[in-house]
Structures are given as C-alpha cells and as structure tokens.
Image: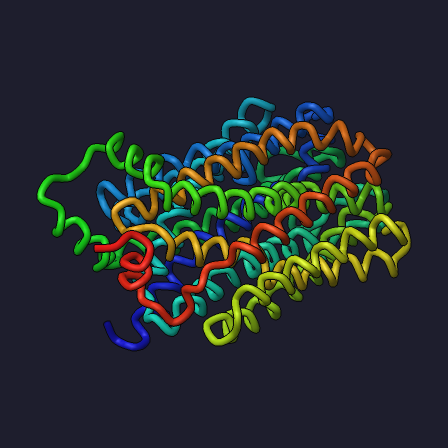
Amino acid sequence: MKKNSSLKSTIAVSLTNYLDAGAIVAGASGLELWQNYLDLHKDTLGWLNAISANCLGAAIGAIIGGTLADKYGRKVIYTYNMLVYMLGVAIIMLAVNIPMLFAGFLVTGISVGVGVPASWTYISESSEVKNRGRNIGISQMAWGIGPTIILILGTLLAAPTKGAGSEGVLFPVVQGVAQLFGVNTAGHELNVFSSRIVFASLFIVAFIAWRLQRKLDESKEWQAAKASEEKQPSTFASFGQLFTNMTNLRTLLFLAGMYLTWNLVASVMGFFQQHIYATAGGLSNEYANLLSVGQWIVIIATTFVFSMIVDKVNQRWLFFTGVLFAVLAWVLVLTVGITSIAGLLVFTLLWGLQGGISVQSFYALWASELFPAKYRAAAQGVMFFIVRGLSAAWGMGFVFIYGEQGEGFTRAAVVMLVLLLISLIIGTTGAPNTRGKSLEQITKERYGE
C-alpha cells in the first residue's frame, strides 16, 4: 500500500462520520422549530431522539451493517448505504406531519448505524501500523467538522424563536425558499424551513460521499481472512463464536461498558444541547447554536492534536485525560451552574476538550484492533447496537428527569457525572497495549494461531 493511500481512503470514509454527527446536530439545532411547528410534547421529543441517528435507528443499522460488512465485504456498504441516508434526509426535508418526521429520522438513523462499523473497520484495516490511531483521529475530526458546519449554517439561517431581531442574518433566504413552496406568512410553518435547508445540505454531502465511497477498493485484510476459510461460516455461527469465546466476551464487556456510560451522556448532549442552552441557560436559538459552534471548533482543534500524538504516547493516560475534562465539566455544572455566561463558556470549553480526546475515538481504535477480521465489524455492530439502543431508552427517560423547561437539570447532572466516572474507571484500568502493533500481531497475541 502506498504511503498516502490510507489517508486518501480515510478522508473518503470519514464523510460517514460527518453525516452521522451532522444528522444528530441538524436535528438538535432545529428541535425547537419542529417542536413549535408540529406541536411536539416532551414525550414525543423523547421518542424522536430514541429512533434517530443518536440512538435506536443507529443501533438497528449497526447490527445490519456489521453483519453485512463481515459477510459480504466492506465495499458493499459503501456502494449502497448513502442512498438510504439520502432517502431519510429527503423525508425529513419534506415532512409536514409527525409520522413523516419520525420516518425520516428512523431511516437516516438506520443508515448511520449501517455505516459506522464498516467505516471504523475499513480505516483500521487500511492503515499503516504507525498511522492507525492518526487515521482514526482524522475520521473523528469529521465528527467535529460536520456539526460545526451544520451549526454555523443553522445560526445564519436561525428563525426568530425569541422574538423580533433574534433571527440569523440569512433568514431572508429561508423566507424566499418558503415562498417557493407557497408559505407566505410568518409563523412556525415559515420558521421550520430553516431546518429543512440545513437537512438539504446533508443530502448534498451524502451524494458526494456516495460518489467517492463506491470507488473504494475492498479491504485487503477482509479478503485475506475470507480466502483463508475453507467454508464461509453462517451469520449465526459467526455470532456464536463471538459470544462463546472468553477473550471476546471480556473485550465486549470492556468496550461496551466504557463506551456505553460515556455515550449515555454524549447522546443527550448531542441531541438536547441547544435545547438545554435555550431552557436552562435562557439563550435564543441563534446564540445557542453559536455557542455550540465554538465548542465544536475546540473539538476539531483538540482532535487534530489527538490524531498527531495518539500513536506516540501512552494511550491509557491520554484516555484518562480526555474523560477527566468531561468529569470537570459536570462538576462545574453542579457547583457553579451554567445560568451565567461565564459558566456556559467554561462548561462549553471543558466539554469541547473532552470531545477532542473522546471515549468514542478510543472505542473506534480499540474495537477495530481487538477482534479478528472475520467478525471485526459484526462485533462493533453488536456493541454499537447495545450502546445506541440503551441510549435510546435513556433519551426517553431523560426528558422526564430534565423536565420540559429544564427544572430537573441538577438531578440530570448528578446522573451524568456518575456515568462519566464509571467510564473513566473502566477505560483507564482496562486500556489495552496495542500501540505500534499490526492487527495480525494483535490477533495472534490475543487468540493464538
């Protein structure tokens, strides 16, 4: 493999991460607009979060995608999956009632889940030994770039949810587009076109990603694994091996435990952050989006640093540092609060720093290293299903803990802090020593010949 080939394929595959995070944040930034337009109540908001790319939709897709990627190859995912994503986004763009909105979020979420195990696996398998962590880090930067662009666009197009003068500078564009569809009066029907345009931008990026990804070569490691098998195992046989081998079980418990506890917090922040800023912090839709843009810029910068050092430093203590920032962010919430602009800014900074050295980056790296190629993607699909599925249930419960206008925010913050501390302990104590080793070497050390 040529020196730069892994970087080229990494960039193409990383668009999946851009679209995953972009779908979550696009939903979050426009949540108040859809809430007003379709009269969504807090239980409905919980269900919408539950079936989205943030939770259940992605969980279902991960099982499908992981199985297909191991059975038929990584390339099959990149040939068709973006078409499903475009369908889901198109439904959201055209939604005029609650069933359409739910269908769009569910289809988009399933597509996101299908792509995630294949993308992390493909990046790891196509990377050079000394660049595997770097490439995973670059793919994670797309998780920051996507939300940043979406939030900037959402800020520029922001509807006046807090009264006259709170709209974005490009809100006249929203009015012009709405008029093309026969919406001529001010109100919720007009304002929601801001969110429709944001989702249209994701549709365009998904089309570009589909054009690039369908040209990728198949993973050489997957081809070698399949060539070494005299008979292809059935899907059930592969899952049987996954759950009966003690090394696999320990790895599943470690990775799922570390990732789940962190993701329960991150999933809430990903979908409800602007809503929290607007209710608990009292910010307008425009300023909530703007503050989140600042946070994602911090995440991108920190992820870049992470990608440059992760293959060179002790990964156990780098993991500890990242989650420590998250813990400090929620300690701040419980001690000082975020009702002041100073509290909001410090919280946003700390959460941005942890996002750059996030648990998800280590999960993507370690999960693609610690399993054999024959069920590497399926294992990630199983864990992603568990994590996002439980996150869906948590998202539904969170709205009742938090309250419709943030009256239970302190109670929710205590739970968040406990979950982050658990992730910190599991990840730090169980961090594997895989840096500088090939995937083949890691597999032989863990499973033998």
